Amino acid sequence: MSQLSQLVGVILMVVGIGGYVYSGMASPTALIPAAFGMVISMLGYYGRHEHSSKTALNLALGVAVAGVVGSIRGLLALPTLLSGGVVERPTAVVSQSIMAVVLIWYVIKGIQSFSAGKR
Image (cartoon, rainbow, N blue to C red; front, side, top):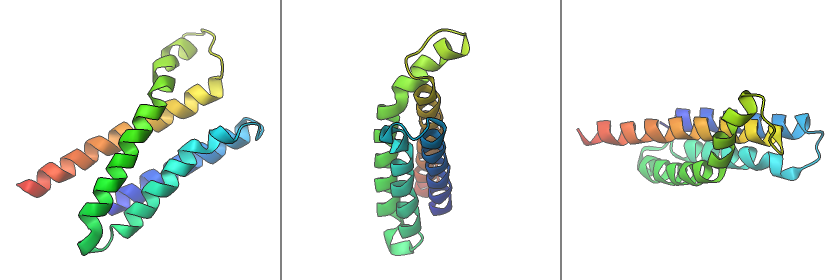
């Protein structure tokens, strides 16, 4: 699970930095996915050790849930954007949607990992 945490972290960092660059570096809030990604990636690195893996995974999943809560608004606006409707900040909607989907998938994988460990 620590490798998955590191991968998810890198994906979110790419999304954050890419969104920031794509937006013309106009808004530092575009880097929010990168910040979440950095924290999750560092926790994944910390979780490589057997004695700290559960703690690191719990913390990473907590960060991921907070990220889902913060980015779900973009995911809810995505159908409007995809159907040709007008949204206030289309780049933010795409970035938040990617972040929400990646983090939801990560939380599901984390729950599955916990369930497999209890068997």
